Image (cartoon, rainbow, N blue to C red; front, side):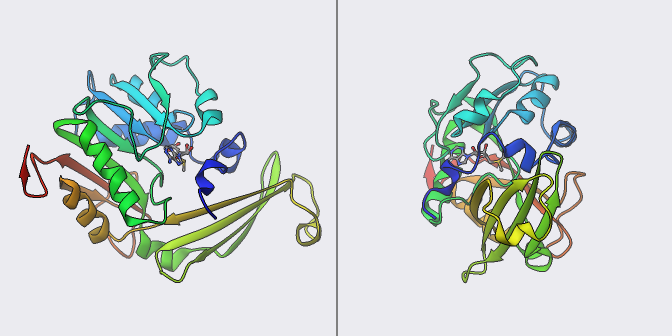
Amino acid sequence: MPEWYRESFDELYSDLYSHRDDEESVRVVELLGRFVRLPGSAVLDVCCGEGRYLKALSRAGAKAHGLDLSETLLKRRDGTVGVFPDACVRGDMRSLPFRDGTFDMCINMFTSMGYFGKNEDELGVLREMRRVLKPRGYCFVDHGNLAWLKRHLEPHTVRRRPRFTTVETRAFLNDGRTVEKSVRVYPAHVPARGLSVLEPLRTYRERVRFFTRSELGDCMARVGFDVLRVMGDYAGSAFDECLSPRLIVLARRRRVAAGRLE
Ligand SMILES: C[S@@+](CC[C@H](N)C(=O)[O-])C[C@H]1O[C@@H](n2cnc3c(N)ncnc32)[C@H](O)[C@@H]1O
């Protein structure tokens, strides 16, 4: 499944992930605002998608900028809500098109890393976020909690949605860390028996690497972040390896990277 992330985020994304909405992003930005001063801060949303976090950040007074690889999702961005018209760029999170030390904060929300199948690339994303941060800038990463997923992964789900019916299958690969998911999209009213015999309208594939708290914390420390706080859900509860659905890390750019003074 080479480079699946180039194909899988298109015009159906907001239907397939409709529960990831503006209400959620407003709640998470409120949580973030408890720890970090947002008004006037320059914040980069790495993998901004359609920009629900850009809207919430702008409303909170931040200068919100976004980057995403999907032209389709960037075009669907709601430009009416205070985000500067030129504040979004198309690009790859492994090579951010910004100067060193540009932002007060970088965020990476709702499982928007772990896509590349190579540890070096995942570290590269964290390194890039660190590079574009000002000294002592903040980084906020929201990923799935590997231990929770191991207990709760649903191997097969059928969802009847307003516009489509979807059949999702999920499984861990042999590494015990990467989840492969396929989403088959059918017309809304397809009968149940059709789901196994009919050709789907679309099939999406995803392959995402998840982390334990210590793995993600170690990666962040390795590239030059100090981890300040680890939370386990969008209410800001303390992280619990067994019980927390999310792995949410707030970190700060360290002045010393890999033993080197900067
Ligand atoms: C799960 S979605 C999350 C979107 C957004 N963070 C949110 O919470 O609504 C992942 C996003 O990552 C983007 N993406 C995937 N691969 C990327 C890459 N290599 N560089 C930049 N963005 C990428 C996708 O286009 C998509 O918008």
